[in-house]
Figure 1 (cartoon, one colour):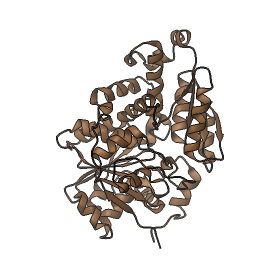
Figure 2: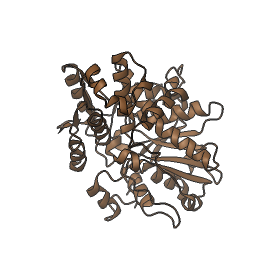
Figure 3: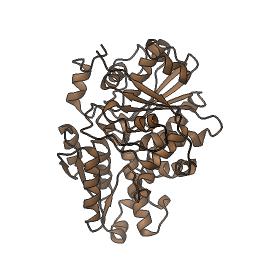
Length: 404
């Protein structure tokens, strides 16, 4: 029998909300200006799934398709690259607006700044983004991956010229390893999208980098006549992406924000566990964190993002692997007339969840709590494309992780 989706409404006491200004519109605009200076930059598509919306009984369904981002098949490069630019600007006493692609790749910068080594831990996409950005900006990268990591993702990082290893520990231990090595290396920097006490500046910059994706999506919805989404479903590992998206849209619509739904992999649902405890303090999930949603296999939350999420999220949802697999199949074989979205295991969980909520009355309680109906305008983020081809085929071709 398939595992059930678990959810909890947000009844945590609010905090002072001191981290919401991190995702202020002017801060996100800096990131978007920086990204637009790259020759590889283009706005990724917003797939309008009218047929699927009608089938599910929604007013509209929109999927931001990050498989086109910088040719890297995932959104993560937005965070790592902007954090590098902010770090270099900070070290040189310059404004980040001066850190364009042309300047960062110039001989002038090489003479003035030299070369740093950027260390990171990754399940795949973040590490590839850091490696790619370091390579393009003439810097160095060292990447550690947790046990069970995909060989395809390992090879994609290695192709970018980074020093990369797969370690016999989980993701959170890899983070500690990367941090220790960075501290022991001359001009070494840890670029991680999780934050802990004493390590908050770079994760803040990474979150602002992710804001480019949310900013594009909001603009694209307005261009097709949808002023604001009523519901935003966003997946979470450590929660940095979720905090960035929730923070941006809360700042964009301060008087009437969308309802935010945060989704996690069942094996690594630390935010759900924190919401379940209900006291406002984060919780940690330990163990191997085994899930097909490799990009979400993180058991220790980013404390900056957690503070944003506890104040603004409507519901936290813990999703078994079949939810993501179903989403991959639905996006990959769409309703006639809808565009195809090639979405990987960590990208498709939103599609799987919205389908589970709307197709039957099994999760009517959550559907009713969120007010999902034929007037709802729902925004999802497919954060990665087909980044693990063998796993992708097993799910789409062989029907791995069935819903019955």
